[in-house]
Length: 355
Image (tube, rainbow, N blue to C red; front, side):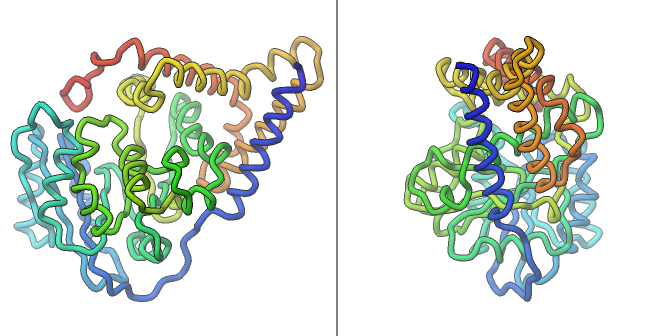
């Protein structure tokens, strides 16, 4: 019984090492002839507009780039900032999303409006707090290749202690559990990995599912979109985007609670799923410490292996390797956030709306 966490950790190390060496990574790129449309849904993002437009309009190696901002009923001057940037010569298009209907959530609704207006052969969805390197879109198109979609996972900037505890678990979760090269050619939607912060999909594949209609009420829209695409015959997966894009999702624990509170219950959409996730986190993060402190050396060996998986994940995603040592504490915080998310389902406010 005591060897179970150890053997499980060895399996996770094997998957992590395989992904470390085989994950798609950007390389030098020449001019991309394919037309690209970037959709950026914005709601109360005035502070992000100037930097975002700057990095988008500096994209290189693209023959045709269409930049579409969809203003989702912002109340903080976002619309004004967009109009001023356009008046100053920024090559952007602005769409004001219609009033949100009851059978849609805000982000999918805004993306649908952008999709209906987009002219590009490739669609990119981008969050307002993401910043791109000048060749980011072109290099991601090159990584996309013959597949229908790809998610170039941005480097997650984590400055405060609470961010450093929680944010690295995002990429670690899929680096240790999903064989990425198998997943991107598989027809099993359960193997989907995606991040809507920087997501690229061929418009033909998006047309097959009616744009964003099938994820109209999905809080975890990126994963649901990837799974829907796979269900309809598309293939794709995640790539290393740490040198192409970066973002700081949250700045303190209050924001982390609100952000994860709105989404974790959707990630583990049944009590059984949430229970299995908690069990996984406990076995890999907390049980080894309990065994170690009780005098069983298997606990120490297991902890060391898990730390190695965290280090590999951090090195591949541009994170801090030293934070890997805090994995047991990170695990306890994540378990708390999963429980909190389920307790607050339907009560959490995000961008002024209840989810």
